[in-house]
Image (cartoon, rainbow, N blue to C red; front, side, top):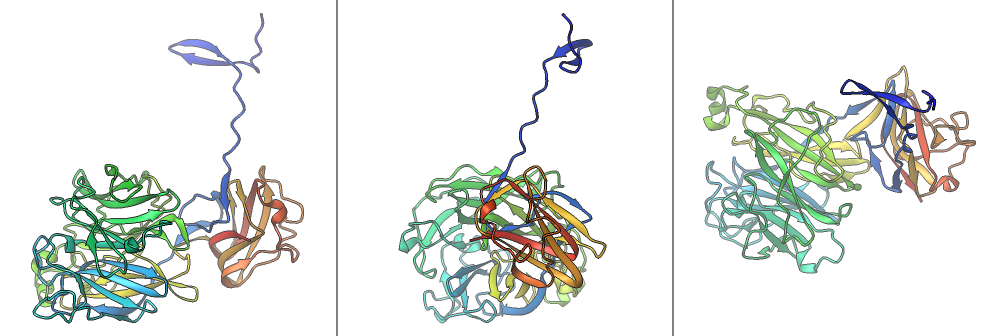
Length: 484
């Protein structure tokens, strides 16, 4: 019997040539079903290839200081700030700690502030606890060591959550384990049970939990150590009381770095994407001498390190995407920003204006001038697909959508432009939606509907496998969504 080489292959195995069966056709490329979700370009989830374009990291812009930590129960060692948007109200939680080295004592308290716009903040006199000889303070938790060390609340968005558990928190250290707390109003808190809910992990940081609609579970991102490096672990729960054992998060092929706080949370406009603004800690990387730091009013023990903020993202599970190793928020000018444990970001990114969102960072930690600063970003503006003046293209992976129109968040220069072509699953332009049919897009908008010869209706393509081709010049593309 004769065998055709075209039909059968030869494989060398242990010095022998073996005939193999005909190779099956490659499986059809996976299709992303994005429905009507908003998709950001913080990772390469949507991107098949880029030609002349690249992902660009956008640095937040410094704004005003919103709080000086100058109350007697706050002080130089305020830490672990959390910002929550609750309807028309913004809530802030943070540790008050005037003296270093008192983590596990009665000294730390949990403080509260609120704002109508995320810019102007007030500290209400709550009269819940007597602290430093007065009940006229903004303290919501006191005399409960070690829970005020790292009390980290969140607004529970799980459908059907009881009204008196709208707010939840985790708090505790390695010796105690993490305890679960609940509140109906975000001010008056109670322990949900007498035993810790998570007992594994180092936990000596800001451990964060939230409800994930995408994964249908609570996620807790917490402190672990790996070969002497501060890193991040994750545990999950369906009821907030029984949790899985923490597992190490993965960072792809990027090098391990000390990540002191992780600040992982569901992005408010696209909660299936988790954004992490982590504090990258550089131990023993000294910039400021002991003498200079003491002249600034600091303790020598907090002079020998420096840190900045890096951006990570995740779509659930145990994988972070470190699209960029570069600093997201640099320490900035002034020696006061180059000392130990300063520049730690708060957990929470919130909308604060038309086309604007804000994040918050602690400045001058361990110094009398310790404060919280607001920084602003364009809405969805963490990362963009960027095209230079010479131009470039970006092609998405095959996808399916629901909706009737394509909306993009973009910006161009006066000379720049964006053009969009819709192709079928094999990459063939679809009649009526080719590059020749596309209307030029120029300007700067958070949401612009894409048109082809004035047509915006894509309902005939909904549910079909398509690819998007973006042809760009001197432009940025931040996000896209198919809208009703």
